[in-house]
Image (cartoon, rainbow, N blue to C red; front, side):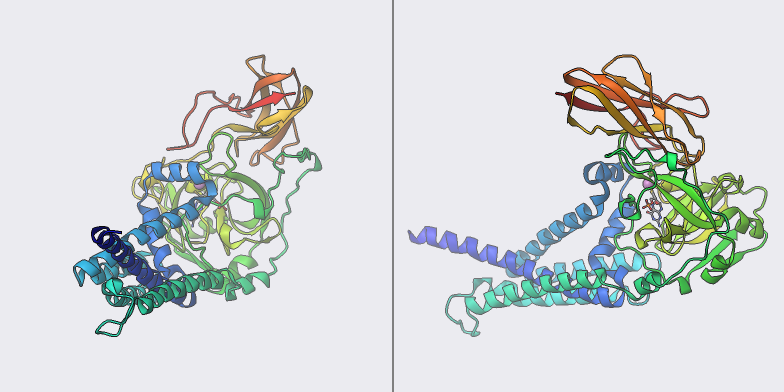
Length: 514
Ligand SMILES: Nc1nc2c(c(=O)[nH]1)N[C@H]1C(S)=C(S)[C@@H](COP(=O)(O)O)O[C@H]1N2
Ligand SMILES: [Mo]
């Protein structure tokens, strides 16, 4: 090897070492920060706080895109993106610190500062919100100050007594310690919390009014979505990177705004009121045609209208802005909460307390409206107001002010792929909550529309299963379905994307009969 090439190689090695030093320093700082957050203030996790700010800054199309690309894994995708961006900045800090000290250390400290700002900006941040990010920034900045200039260390100890070997041990050690701390923090967070123990020990009161799910509502066809969705399979959509864990003992709901008297109700008071069961299908406005951001549960709760009656909304009010513990808001037409439908403050879901992901201890459920305008989880506040005075989380980001659920249907059986030729069973679900479904039709290729059989509807507030038998010749086919509502509307073939007020169009699947 010529001397020149040797020098070029070693320059490249030094640069890689400096970049690696930056990454090791930031991993060490972030790891310690995450660990402290897991102990002290879960929602102050530096990475989750920055992620939360990014989620809040994202416009409607970005949410739509994230859900289209990653579905309910959108949060994992976001955190992965943040980790990659962090690694990039960390490498830059290492290079900068070696070439132009102290700017690398300053950059590392700025990362910590970003975490501090993000954590403090979160709703209900708590007194320790800044601590994890401060520690992370100080450690990262100190570590890069020590490590980066030593990227040039020689195999033998130099004047300062530092050899390449010792630097390597320092750098790799910092990175490994940081990674271990991150893993530890994750396991602490996943582990049983005190509030999880409270939830596990809860027994909800019996329902004063029980809901019936008729046996004939469930067709029991393999591959068809069950008419009541088990909690573990229920879709989850929210902006929370860390699921709030509220202690019911601390929970309060405040009803205020344009009311004659403010009402505050505690967990104990809520459970002492008559609780009713209702079966309601919840759907997300981001659900694409044929998508699975929809599910049905037997909810247990108390009618919101009863509590509003105590507060007495002023005649000019037309909206209730509900707010969650973590700052999410939804604007629900006052009328939908008072017109007699099963709009409830839910505490139970399919026979158990709400799962944390679905809003423990209390959430709203309102039949007929998409979740973003009605289904506030971890709800702590109802502000009676007007649509022309207040805006909610998603309406601020370009989604429609009102979100009535659109008429939709989906084919679950068969999925894409091969089916035996001959008589074939098609099956799926159809919904337009609070309007109701009276028919579903299916079509093979561009043939005539044929009426499907409907299962017994639980109510107008739930989806309905359907099935149909169609003859299929060998070869490729396109199958489609469309629903007919109790209002006499036939599901439109006109396609619309989820933004700003819900997707439309016919669901179709391509299959091959063999
Ligand atoms: N606190 C809070 N509540 C929320 C949301 C949220 O981001 N934060 N998302 C809403 C949306 S968009 C939907 S579709 C439903 C989903 O409820 P689920 O996750 O229980 O299925 O919750 C609603 N309630
Ligand atoms: Mo949603």
